[in-house]
Length: 63
Image 1 (cartoon, rainbow, N blue to C red):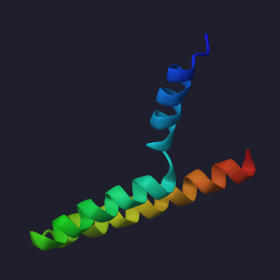
Image 2 (image 1 turned 45 degrees about the horizontal axis):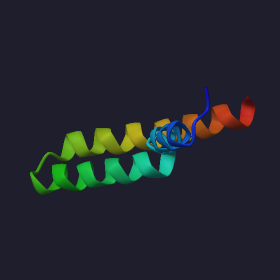
Image 3 (image 1 turned 90 degrees about the vertical axis):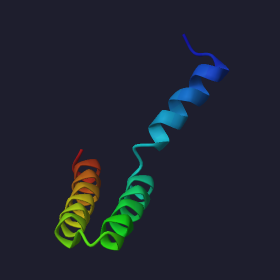
Image 4 (image 1 turned 180 degrees about the horizontal axis):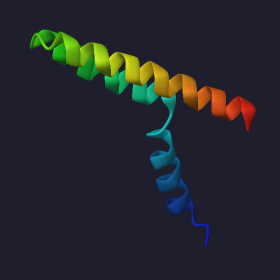
């Protein structure tokens, strides 16, 4: 079932779930929210993003 193109596609999809990539996306969205004066939404997004990255790391260490 493995093919070179299939493996590259799956690796690309897997990269989208990396904590660093997700934090960069959240940082961009957070900056946009702050630009439009949506401080409470930006704060909530920051707390959720950091919590999700921390939980992801914790689960990987425990598992």
